[in-house]
Length: 127
Image 1 (cartoon, rainbow, N blue to C red):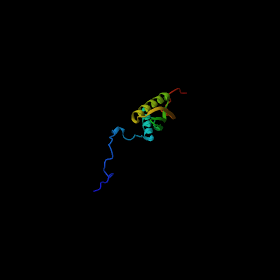
Image 2: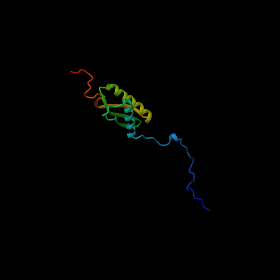
Image 3: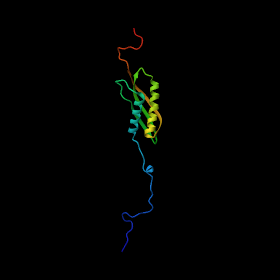
Image 4: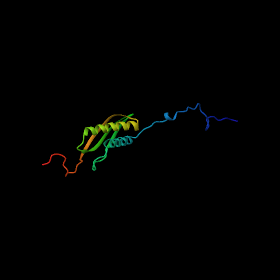
């Protein structure tokens, strides 16, 4: 009788077991990171004026770091620098926590201001 080696199911050497946490790689799509950033900006701003669009975010991911640009609309009058600081802080926290990425830059662009008081109700001096 002749023995054939290399057949199906035949062991070819020692089997190496790799721990589950070390198998493969994890890649989070840029669109997912952008959605996390936009939602974080919404959380930081609270309720928006009725006609304002929700914040939008775009990202550039390079290895484990992400640069974020958030475009938003605010009510007027508003403390614009305070809103921008809050958005930067919240976006950095949420992207780091949920995506596990470093966030070296969050650029906030205020595209539009919306009056929060109807035209007929003046809040300052009137003639």
